[in-house]
Amino acid sequence: MNCIYIDPPYNTGNEGWVYNDAVNDPRIKKWLGQVVGKEGEDLTRHDKWLCMMYPRLKLLHRLLAKDGVIFISIDDNEAANLRLIMDEIFGATNFVANILWQKKYAVANDHKSIAPMHDHIFVFRKTANWERLLLPRTEDKDRQYRLEDTNGIFRTSDYTCNKSADERPNLYYPIMQPNTGEEIWPKRNAVWRYSQERHAQNIQDNLIYWGKEGIGKTPSFKRYRDSLKNAGGVVPQTWWTHEFCGHTDAAKKEIRAIMAEGNGIDDFVTPKPSTLIERILQIATGKDALVLDSFAGSGTTAHAVLKLNAQDGGNRRFILCEMMDYAETITAERVRRVMAGYGEGNKATAGLGGAFSYYTVGEPLFLPDDNLNEAVGVQVIRDYVAYTENIPQESRTTTDNPVSPYLLGQTPDAAWLFHYEPDRATLLDMDFLGSLQFGGKRPALVVVYADACLLSPEFLQRHGLVFKKIPRDITRL
Ligand SMILES: C[S@@+](CC[C@H](N)C(=O)[O-])C[C@H]1O[C@@H](n2cnc3c(N)ncnc32)[C@H](O)[C@@H]1O
Image (tube, rainbow, N blue to C red):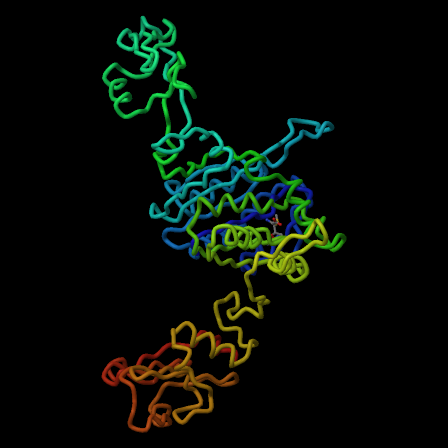
């Protein structure tokens, strides 16, 4: 994963959020499946939120590529706590920024205290390998470049500075207007910006502008667009105004325009405008990035990915996760609509293109005690083991094959066997080896999963055998 953006529940104390981790700790287990947080300032409110976030952040940290970065939206209810666990999990040295996003553009007149106008967006990199990108130049910035000569398009900047002749006597000198021959002095309280030597160089490089007709009395310095540092890209900063990346109201309008009213879209209290996540993507990663949002809500992150791809020809991909039943009707539906286009008449918005697959999570493969959840069925377990063993797709076998019903797959160099029976413990022993029908083409390495092994380590090594124990509670069998 190159970039992760998450917008977890804010723990405001009056909106509940679901504590849904299967944990064995009895102090935490009692919250399982409950909507917690609604009780406001009970003494465990922040503990519960942190217990929900901590394992997720640990996992997200593992999922990030070495040169990846995570952005997390949060308000002041948990900002301080979140910063501490992020420091712990990602390391304080990988803290990049605390961006302040101006989520509101107007103060609520009836606010009883000091009206919060911003959210935090914490940025942590996985390692120092993350490279921050520049924001593209805006048209507004480009509009300043209105003048042109044979060397290119330029804007002008002041030829004087705010120092006085007493402070900088070397910068107080007359310069010659090249077209009128007039001698021009700066003001005594605002001397030239450049030394006499540098001024001579500026003349030689044709960097002085004397007005449209060339006969002005005030020189200016020519700044060419092509010579901008960083190829003209803009260095991102921590203050993100609503003009720069949208606000909550605009986010609500954006979803309403895409989705039909009344299907639960108004339940999103803190949707994010797609422009906000576009800004994040612009500075976070390149055009081939894989972007994850594990608190997907209304699907804004996928919308932003598709929008940016359509704008800059990128090939970014996204993974969204959503636990609520609106994953299909809102999260995925929004993405479908922005891909295909939506709205009618003069409100019609063209489709952004793209595609995605929709999956639902099945039964967990492992139980909280780390044993296999055998209820998922033999085929699912076989597929999982074949996947974890990296058996190439084309080398995988069904149970109906000449070698053994337990064969998972075979290449010229290796074979993998999953000796598993749901209702009895299995063995790697001489009998099992004798049942394998490799027909004289036994690969050098044979990996066997079973409940127990009756062969000695020396025997296994001598015959290129590797035993792997199936993680299940065989005492129950
Ligand atoms: C603040 S919303 C995200 C809004 C999203 N950024 C958008 O623009 O629409 C948080 C999402 O995380 C999901 N979520 C995941 N785990 C959750 C949990 N344990 N408790 C509550 N919500 C959770 C919620 O269902 C909700 O859709």
